[in-house]
Length: 220
Image (cartoon, rainbow, N blue to C red; front, side):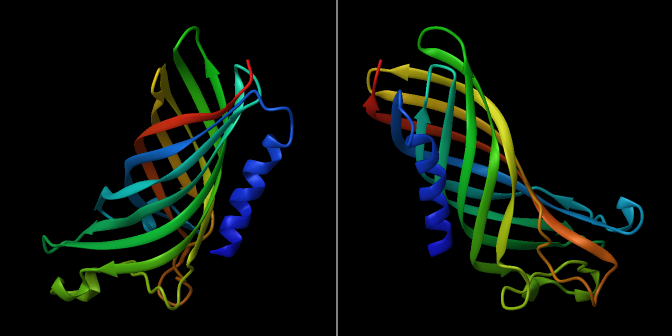
């Protein structure tokens, strides 16, 4: 947790150290649609599972720094609900839900004139799993479950790349953003060395959110 806070301070502090054009702070609220991506030595279909998107809440504190009208940086300290839902051959579904505290740092490029703008974002994220749960007790045949997460054994750290875009509207009461982001974890989530040939199991997330920012420093 301390490492994540230090990373957020570092990510925000680097661009702010220069001559700031504007700094805003606010919140982002949204939902993430998650699934599990597995790879290994062989064809991707050898490790894939029949699944559907697992939705999770994503929200937290966001800080944006713009060094000029086009280029800036946006960092966040977020709560992120992730996981996956495997559709089993017996008609049941096995859901794994992971709750993370997550730090993100995104380069922000915006285009347009006036109060309405389009933007692109891209960067990195890192998270730590606070808790995990599943519905194993409801499943009749445990042999049908291919990937199962154990928070005491498997990897609690989660890091990867995130990118996307959206549009924003600057109003008299603050700045509103609509964000569309895709996150790809890079490290393996589950220790599969004794259960399957898969080398990496990674959560992918499609995130849709609304951000509200209030300027605290503005230099025109």
